[in-house]
Amino acid sequence: MPKEYRKEKLKTDPLLKKMQAAEEVIWINPDRIPFAGAKDSLELSMKDIEDAEARLLRFAPFIMKCFPETEAQGGIIESALTEIPDMRARLNEKYGSHLQGRLFLKQDSHLAIAGSVKARGGIYEVLKHTEELALSAGILKENDDYAKLA
Image (cartoon, rainbow, N blue to C red; front, side):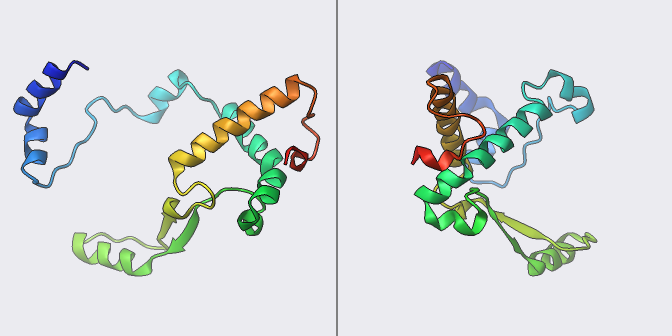
């Protein structure tokens, strides 16, 4: 994006002007469409998700061996879920909503090893590349205990 375009946008875009003035704003994507209309054009499929899950499970013994702090999660880098009942009550009170059941906070900031979802994605990419290289070099088979990579 050219610098001139960004400068002009900062001067003319009403949303950006409010943000610059430290005013509260909300942005709702005007191009959003329902999932049913978008799912066929998505780059990733359920098969991709299942493939990633299987890869992470294969690498779990390796992760546990290299990072003992993940033992309690079986070598899976997952965010803790913490129940926040006071938040549910506050939301109901402040917004007149009628949330029922249990409300949880997904603590991505407390991910073992990674510390963030973005870093966990980077770790996954490294593991995927490592697996591809190790499989193609004959160092590893999918049914091996991946802890041997340690």
